[in-house]
Length: 138
Image (cartoon, rainbow, N blue to C red; front, top):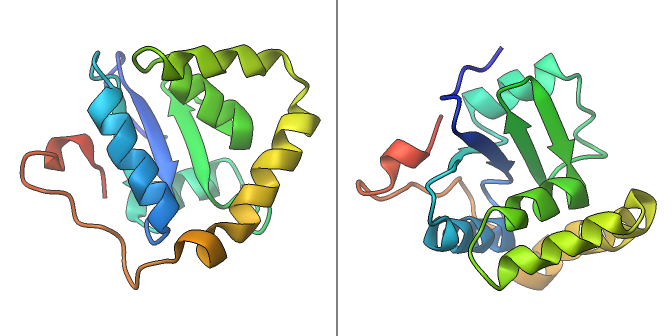
């Protein structure tokens, strides 16, 4: 089991995806309460959670939100729960949690499937600056 501080939540993201990396940078900038930690899905922590929750990475491959209560959120639910903790006005997107997940995930999956074609990808996971290293797990 992954052990993170009680007041933190862990965002697992596709470390080679340009859109995902830009989203992580956006979250860091707007995480005024310093809630989130980050780990690439391709790293040790990401692989450990994938194994622990027996995640089929062919179906879930872009963003996960892990909470200390051994809870894991996927796809649009993860994204909207993350947005709910950010500063105004992005936190207002959490209202879309009332939309059934199969509808939200249809849109999410379309974007996730096309993210490399639209935004490109890197050869390796981004390396955080010294200032941000404390927010990242391997």
